[in-house]
Length: 259
View (cartoon, rainbow, N blue to C red):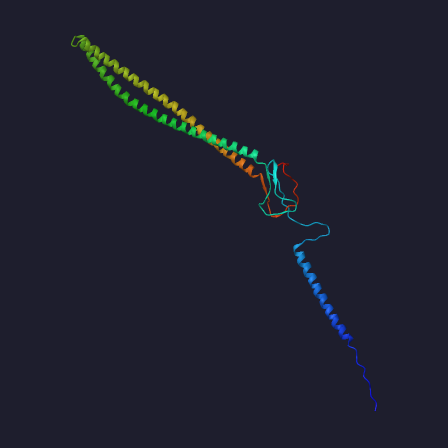
């Protein structure tokens, strides 16, 4: 009876297959991790071979001439919209503003004076017109007195011829007539003066009305000067027009900037 010896087969290929799968899995994981890392990095960073990146540029310029008082930012600093970048010396512009405000106050004072003169001229016109009206009434009454005194004088003049009255009575009638006539003339002169004063007051009123108009126009101009001075003063504070990174700050304190 013979026996057959069986030699066991080696298991090396199975072990190698498991190792290969494990290594392959690790490579896949590493590759996936590397790919995701690059993807997320690319979402937040720009890379280029020729060092050119597209971006929005907001230039910052001064609108007025002035010396830099203080710089608040540095190169490559991130700023928000409205942040102060630098300020200019404000002393000269403050003086200009004060002068404009003083000129405006003077213009308003001139307007008040012109309006007061205009009111006084209007009052003078009304007073003169009232005086003319009063004089007219008095003249009418004086004319009646002259007529009555003239009638009495003429009657006494006839009576004196036949000696029906005394010389004294005749002279009294004559004096009354002359007095009434003089009183009438005085009232006429007063009316003429009042009429002249009315014309003068009217001329003054027209002149003061023109002065009021000129003063009002001057006030508007002075108000414009004040607003312009305030606007220039606001330009001494230069702020960031947009949020972003300051590429370079080419100015320093004491430097003169041109508009």
